[in-house]
Image (cartoon, rainbow, N blue to C red; front, top):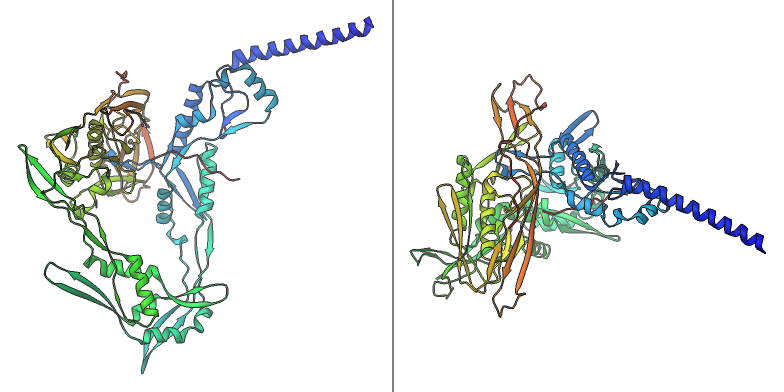
Length: 638
């Protein structure tokens, strides 16, 4: 019995010795190569992170994404190719809108857990048990609308809408006849395939190079569907013109407006509804709504008027009572026309809906007593057009009342932003061309209103920082960008009383004062902490035929990228219905702003050639010790 026991002990000791040696060797490898680092076979996309620290991985991922941004999105169809630059580069950085944004911190948090990567046993599991590659993906946002618009603009010939078979009138002696017209198939860009290819490339941290595919589009209504319904179509058209009416009621009288729609137009509205068992005549709702929108609604629609007044020398002046607006309810009116016309009636009344303008009279006790918060920003150095837009936006907001519990939307309050409302255009660079766009300077309004809401201690429900640092909005981290239709700036008036907005422009300084009634709340914000400073790339030179040969026009000077945050704290008074203390951190990430210069060339040159010349950033932001559009995880398919 002793010999077997001895042999077993030897075997056990040998195994234990081998295990100890195995663990010792691997511990040595882990401690020297992988402690606090990414483990073997860990990667983000096709970028291996094995053996890298978190900071090294962060730098590598950022560099790879910068390469993708520099390369842009390439699209090819047949022998023609076009490249979408991923930055819209304006001469006013308010209008800067990167098409692709990497959420670097979220991506790292998703792939690197410091607790796991400082644990020897997690390393053993990763190396010897989970032996396959651990491939994770970056978190980013892609402006698919911008990509779609680029493709629609540059490959127009690939989008041919199918044409349904349709009825039309032909005037041939001695009578007008209704005839059936043949359908036509179409084709279109296969956007689902394109975005799948783009997201697959980005998920692998590769610059997308997409081959455009098209898909056939077939009409729903065929000529054969019309033949048996010609008699019914003739009956509808044979009744003659359609009368559309609107009753307008005044203070002392009412009037009725009429619009006559002729049979040839009605014929174009006739369409069909196909089911599994039958085909019936219907009217094309989209065509009716388009007609109402362009031909009738402009004579009826009225914008609502927001209530407002001014306070001068402590007294109320320039009162403007709110007034509800009105709009043609296109959906309901189109349905009414359809029901009446198919039912044999040739007259239809329009359906109108009111829009709220908050009717308030001067007799209301609004409790506008004192300034509850003020926001400030400086726009020194702004060009003439930008100054005009800032003043225009300030004038629009001046005197607006925000009712209790209302969620204020800055975009809604500003309304239409185009030449009709007094705004001027700024230039943006798309490819090698300059294109005018409205809205330059309005982020000065957004940023200042944001600061006013903070100073008033109001809950912020929507705020997005700029993608780049903008000199007008320093210190970094306390800005708010707006761009129609998004992002917006929104906050809630939870003071229990009305808030009055008052605007002041003193030389190069913009102020918004929020007037109301103080309820005892105390709002504080810390000074922004600015860190992770990233130098911009060299100036990008683009040749263009939009400028005279040899003439040079540059955008705003380059700026460093950075991360920033500040803390917002509101202490509510005793007896408030909300939580006594509300705290929130506003974090911002800014990518480096690369200056861009357009250089004029003759038409015989090849425009669009970009080169780089090294320049030094004009300003170097400083990290300051302290005393929050949207990220998406890509959907990939193989």
